[in-house]
Image 1: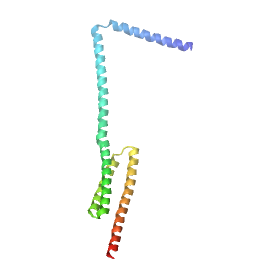
Image 2: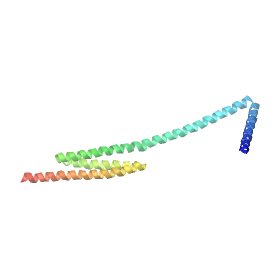
Image 3: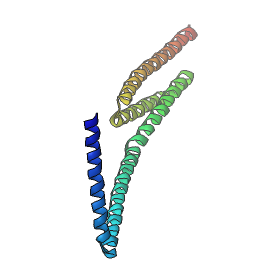
Image 4: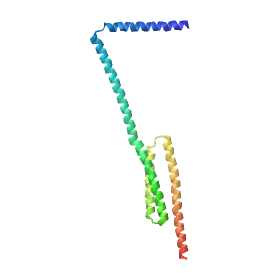
Length: 168
């Protein structure tokens, strides 16, 4: 340890000598030279501050672009899928109630709208979580459509059975 302490002390002494030499040299400078150096350092700090600010503004612009170009449209496609799923359910219920074919047309339009928004969602997904969500949405909506078709089929069978019963 004594060797390390002496090396440390030696390095410390060298640094002190360097600083004292620098201080002596600075004292010999004229006030004009000192002001020039101080002004130069001030300009350097301002330039560095400006560069950092530009970098931060660039990052903010990228974040805003991500939000406007990806996250908002992604959220919009999710909301539209929810709306189209609701419209589909309403069309099935209305068809079961009055068997008007216009409700089947609404059902088809809602399914097409859902598929279009799901495709948009898939295009905008960037994370593994969003990709997994997209697959889950597709699987659940497929099941949802199968159930809708079953309900419509049961309504048609019910009405066919009622016609047979009423006609006999």
